[in-house]
Length: 292
Image (tube, rainbow, N blue to C red; front, side, top):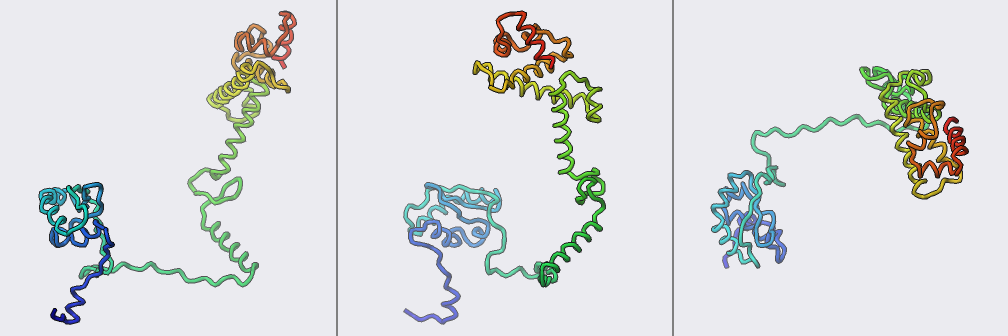
């Protein structure tokens, strides 16, 4: 066997990344010799799925071209001598990586990427006092650079935004809704004009939304008691029933009669809440409880 010059041997050597039994690696290594260098630059085997070899291409046109060459490509793969060679080809267009391979030199005339300028390093603070002083100066500079601050907490905000920041606005909205729910629960007969005396700018839509939410909540409490067939030890269900009747009837307390309450609650729930057998006594208890 004749000896080759060292330069020729080095130029002819390529590192092998094929593991024993790695059919895909063997196909990928032999791909340029199977399809030719020009076609190999536009395609690459990426997966073996069952009896099919998945080939990535730059475009659908290349997939169609390789589809025409399927028989020749399969014959070339079979000639490699791998175990269980694929029997068919499938293609994925547009998934071939177009980036520069590792070690490849940039094209002639290509502009190198510019490095981002690094910020000047800051010496660590000598002690806690110096660190706090730096923090105060940064906060002061940020406040001066900001256009405005929140009227409630003083946090920085956009100049063209609301007077308060989003967290403060959410907190105010939650507090407003809570006060409205409390007012509607304690005095369900109050009208919109009367509520505006306690909570400014309450709209009819807000009031109706709170009323419906309380009605749903109270009915769940009452329905749970009806199914259990008993009331809680605190007697909460009677207060809830009174509020429910007033909210549902939309009438002042002096116009709520036992018949109205029985009609809105149902006979079974009404009897559970006020179990007096005597109609007259039941009427008195119902009226007193509802009008509280």
